[in-house]
Length: 264
Image 1 (cartoon, rainbow, N blue to C red):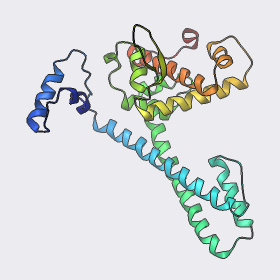
Image 2 (image 1 turned 90 degrees about the horizontal axis):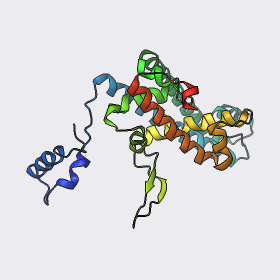
Image 3 (image 1 turned 60 degrees about the horizontal axis):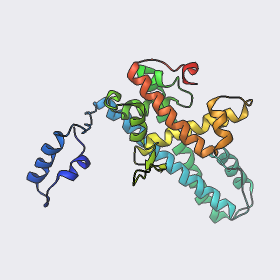
Image 4 (image 1 turned 135 degrees about the horizontal axis):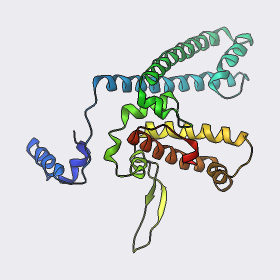
């Protein structure tokens, strides 16, 4: 299957079925054209699980922010984080709030716990899929990649042999700098963010977790520690996510597991 956006440069004036068909025929003759494989129903079902979970996570964030903002108006605050919402709600129950304020707060609390339970249920399903997939188990050997990221990569990525190198996969995910070259001068800007937003965010969050763990350890001479001495945590996370994407390409292409000695 060819992406419709790839055919746009070949469409002549006028939006007709005949013009679209001609553009597709023109596009498929190009040697650099990349095709999107047709996904199986099982893969589509797994992606639906990921999309539903991501939707519920956004809802949970909205409810959490609403509870925190409303209770803050009454002077009731707690530390940030979803795991502290229960403590915040308990403080609201103990506080001397007007009776008209307790009902909406209880409705928001019910919404919070129901949404969290649904997220946990979908997370358990994703973990089961990660255990059943050999490719997902292989990707989970990479530091910073858990069952959610591994299954999302396996279900979303096309055949990695279609990428000429690991950098092509990183560029496909939007983790490489955007070039601004003119007059024979090479200039590299910020990361393009033109790739897959969901996968890029999962890799970035995994990289943040690895960096947090590494900062708690002893100083060393490894690649990540040296990078943290020169860059901010967010910049280092992007670089590490880029590195993780390249390792993903190598593992899926060669069918091997991650070995820290080789990746250092």
